[in-house]
Length: 281
Image (cartoon, rainbow, N blue to C red; front, side, top):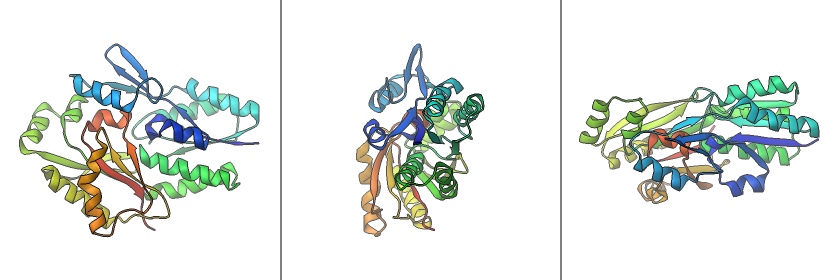
């Protein structure tokens, strides 16, 4: 009896990584006008941001259906395998609920669903830990239990370079977005208890990054786990943050990079940067 580790494409994994670690991924769908894509399969992050900046309206994203999960769950049942699925925050998407429905339809007990209450690299941290525990021989139920205990320590802080894409998505009025452009307002966002919220606002990118550093100082990294530098379209944005962390002796020891994909990227837009990691206990 094997253990299958499953996640969705909002985790923003590199396909080579999921293949190497034996992780299955259920894709979100993205719609640009009449063109439909499957995240991680028929559209890359580079193409997504190109289309995002060229368009005048936001793309729409859609969660996987119960049928998408049911196919995988039935394959696991027929093979006698167990499943640990780590999924996008139920506050942000109905993806987790789709998996709950599919598990009920499958009628197979050893399917363990973990609501990450997180997104993007926050999910990656949990999935990677699940793989480590699986490879150490831990049973699926215990893996899910360990993930439930760890997920409350995930921290994500990020700086948005523009409010335009929140406006396009209906999260801000045109006046609010325009005011932000005039005043060079840069929000610092966070993901806590599954929801995205604004943790601080600053005038100008330099001041916003300084706010980000303050949050990282107040919420130190646990280097027993990998940390991730988050960026939307520009990996070079690391030069705005990482040297400052190095100067303070706060640069994570196990640092990786994660490009934020369509699910979150459609709201934060290009030019965003941040960190995802486990809070020191």
